Length: 229
Image 1 (cartoon, rainbow, N blue to C red):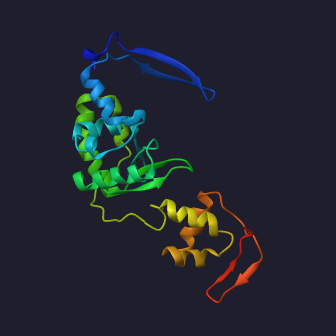
Image 2: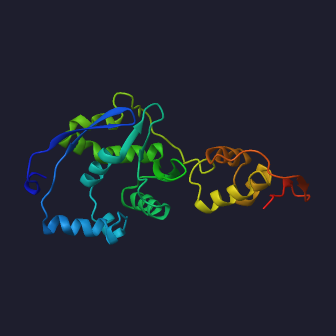
Image 3: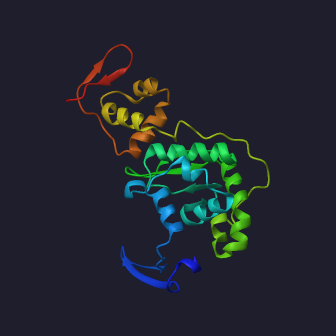
């Protein structure tokens, strides 16, 4: 970015959450190239995903993206992209694009009650790190820790599928869970959305749902309770 800046980067110091956070800041010039990128990535002044800029991505830009928002989970052998700034539909677009373009498999996973992220399977993580590793080694070796060294263990081929019972919950399923959990038993809800009762209970705990909310009623298809509302 040297040709686009006025001054060299400056080290910044910011106290936050009872800790000192260090960073590097620099200001860029206003140029037609950067303005075009801004309009592509910030339509209507808000950051958003579109196929227009996804189709311009390369393996190098994927490496830059991973060095910024990616992380590796040692011991579990999978990596993630923290893309919480985008809504669920745009996250799904990114997941489908990475799968169709580079064969990187994964799912959209809820990180907390407000944000979603991309969690890749072990096979998808292998493919992701194979693509970005050459660029990280040559361009930014200080970021090699994001590749999982020395903890990464890939001595034998992996055959797996993403556990759809625990991950990839849709907003519609979460809405149903918030409405019915505590009124209907977990098994009854699981049958409606084609998941396991254990997955329903785990997801309910993730959403902070617990306990019954009314008197017990049975309709012959499973005991459940009617909500007061």
